[in-house]
Image (tube, rainbow, N blue to C red; front, side, top):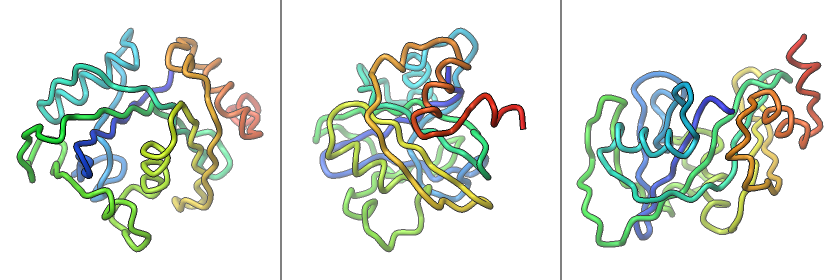
Length: 187
């Protein structure tokens, strides 16, 4: 299994984002999510993380694929990608300070604006695909010296959400982009 999950929660023309105070992407707006616990399924993990970080108890989420990344030509991780949609009249007051940072509803136009520098680097393209394309996709990010230099997208089988063998899953995900996962791990 991948180690992380991320969920973008949509309400009408807004998405609930978290400006993290620590960890990866500190100071950048990102989706809600976190780390899978031992023996936890990706779906159970994302539902738990959303509730812990926001207090929102989601009845369902839609699995939309995975986000993987390489850093300096080495596979460096991945996360399961989910989309949740709340009714337009769902009341959730923001901005809201939580343990992880600051939650706020952001207009989709603001998120996708080409001059917006306040998001995790891959989010505008990933969110655009989440909103415009149905199905599952793998979003692969290539970083060099901590800079996103390229992103690829490829259709992915919905079954990847249920592949329990970490090595098998990461091997399948990275091979799609011509990355020899096993060789890279041994470098």
